[in-house]
Image (cartoon, rainbow, N blue to C red):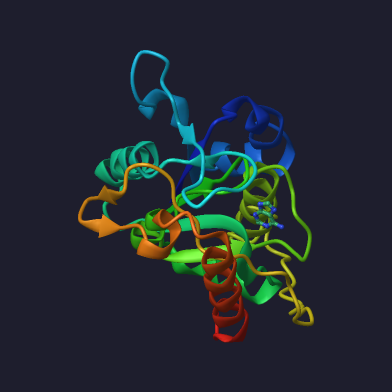
Length: 221
Ligand code: ADE
């Protein structure tokens, strides 16, 4: 039985997908167990805050490191060896051969669904894998997580009724990659925000971000 936990600010989005059709049958057959974890439950303060503005300036809000750390650690208490998978357009492109590998592996998974303009880069220290469903940007990681879950669960032996075909797909390269971002606090669990982002020097910040983007694009994912 594969145990799949999903960390999201919108658990209700999963209701229809996980409780219908093949995903429902897979649970009935005890091939998979789902658990939805509401990131809001790990928010800070009375208002359960989960987001903040980016250091160095820029539009929008980022998910803060602390609520995400707490939620991931909570999920790990249930499945200490689970692989932590971050949904991000920056991740490794999802392909059928990978879905097959996961379905055959018997590993457990913790899916982390991002929202807003991104997340504090320091959460990557807890992430085993970054996965993208394609070269387009969605409002959050929920739809990608559902896509990946669906593609894996239907391949678990016995779920489709046996006749699974493992046709291997691949996609060409060329996605848009982002620079690392950070929000409060400046130091979290000993991990520091890059100093350049705290200088207020917009030219330097832009230069740094550009170099980081290039580094990410040119590195092997
Ligand atoms: N979050 C936003 N867009 C995404 C994508 N294309 N794949 C995975 N997660 C995402």
